[in-house]
Image (cartoon, rainbow, N blue to C red):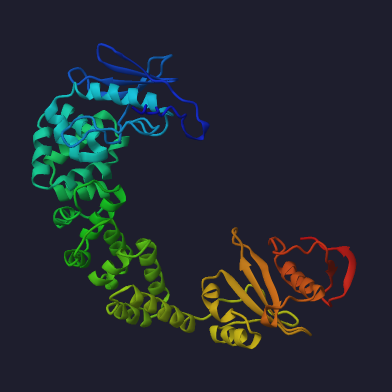
Amino acid sequence: MKQLALDLSPTPSGAPCVVPRYRVARDGLVEDLGETRIVYGFWERLFGCWRVDPETGRGVEMLPMLPILGARGACAVPVDGTGHPLLGDGAGLDPLARRRTVVALASYFATVPARPRRLVAPMGRYQWAALDLIWQLPGFAQFLDGELVRDHGQFVFACLALAGVERLKRRARRRLGAAMMRVRRHRLLGGLAGARPSRAIGAALARLGDGPCPAAVYARLVGACAQPAAVKALGHLNRLGAAEIAVLCALPQGARRPRLIEVLAGLPDPLALAEGVAGLIEKLPPPWDGRAIQALARVANAAALARWLDRWDRRRERLLPFPPPPIAAAAGLEPIASGDALRAEGRRMGNCLGTLVGAVLDGAAYFYRWTGPTPADVMIERDERGQWRLAAALAANNHPLDRHTHAYLRHIVQSRFQNAVLAGDDARCGAYTPTGRPTSRTATA
């Protein structure tokens, strides 16, 4: 018979292992985790969870937000891992300590009546919050049972998430639970989300599925249900999830087409894509913004969306004027002040300037033509502090300039932006006068 090896490996990253100790007191289970003491109140006394200072004896109530109960209400935490089953990864537990903690918590939850445990099992991260409300509020168990039976669990999840139940004190949680049972649903959700109440929210919540969603998803959905056009789009979606809701809220009103929403929701990072589409439409002047929205109605797949983005981005580059140049024209240094001129310069000099029109329109860069003995293109860009700096100065076909010409161009930019951080290491170059002749001083950045 082969003997099985025990997993006694230390916690990851060399963190010190905590050995939990447990004892049963009159009012609950006491857990000592090094310098931290947790008290779990018994159901028949005062149900709750408190973090207690071992020296002063003062406790602060906690609301664990990790699921611990299985489908039938029994403790169902896997013994693998190093995190605490209820407190998360803050406590480093070795495999043996983790098993000891799981056994202790399973014994503790066995003291909770079976009916509440089975009732809150589908609540995921809100299991403890639901048990707390059942203990505090007579009738909440019947209310929660009815909501789950009628597939209205998302209403409960939305209320708990939007209210930030994990941050509420015990009395505030009691008031929230009472409001969930007595206040009209659309009014309660509208108040929690800070949006106009809409009766459409009930039907929308029913399509979200079984598990709880992040608070941002519920907030977006409540806000969308306050807009008739958004409600119409929601009703025509084949599927309603977090991605679809985020895309719907990011798109401008005229572009909220169900087919487009489903295309964007099926792509990686749908919210960023939807915000990119909305930003592009916003930058187009009238009436081109309306025409772009009309063209979106024909987008049926990811390839069509890519073509739409490319086409209208190029159209934006042709329609919008360049911003004023950050550096006025100097001797031999001329700003390239239009998209057509920038594309022509790129063809003439054999470089990629024609693809950088968008950077100029967005205020991130600007380009100049150097008409000296060695023609060149000069790029200045904004750094992370928003200051302009010399980014590049290259001759035709991206060939580097000689030291004297590069230093002279650097001097022109530096003289106009004394506080800018200039790119490149020119410490070895001499300082140059506007005529291009070196002086005896050493250049400073």
